[in-house]
Length: 294
Ligand code: UTP
Image (cartoon, rainbow, N blue to C red; front, side, top):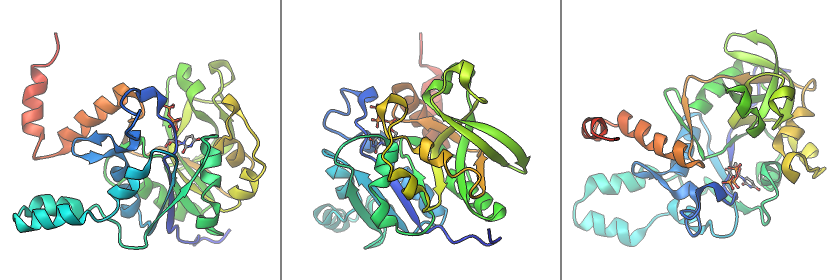
């Protein structure tokens, strides 16, 4: 593998999941559109990807997710109204989150058959080049952003596959893809094996994959098999595992805090954590939090 791996220009954002853990809120509103402070969850992932150098954003959507498309489009009436009323800060907040024309594309998963299937649905839009995957429900808070830290490792180790990982309590491994770790080089941990959702007794470590990946296009040939794994779903982890030994494969523990916004408690925590990073909100929020609770 060359020391200078190909540039990662594209990111896939799978947003076709049903969000059953967040009902009834997600009955008519996609969970990716729930706001953390004043921006929908999905916008944080787009900003993180852009900061990492991503130029093209590929959303894998499903039925009922149409307002995600609207969110990344101009809202002419609103923009004209804000402009006429000289509400510059509000207008800027709409425009700064908008990717340039042609940088966003959408494809449909049609049936929610699992994360591996969602990524496979984007194969024609990705083509034959490395790409990132960001699960927007996993909100990463920190600087540099989660994907930017992974890109640094991608360039340092000569490319291949990079996953973000977090140390979890053993009893939680059954909810994640779990890593069998090898050598540690700086902040890159060599990945020797992967197991999807193992029971604690079968987990090779407590290092769990969280929702950020840099993948090689070879993943699509593996996903083509459409094999189901844990939970009867087409798992991304199973296809990634088949790339081990064929290319460099590393996990990165980023310095970012990660909040699972697909989970009610994680979502509440994300709102507080992001609120506390915002100079316009933090003082009032801190004062009020002191008075919260029994
Ligand atoms: P989750 O495991 O959070 O599943 O998916 P979910 O269906 O969205 O949520 P719950 O568990 O029912 O509450 C992780 C990520 O993979 C995407 C989701 O949109 C989310 O970003 N996903 C999952 C798909 O795009 N398609 C799928 O078939 C499954």
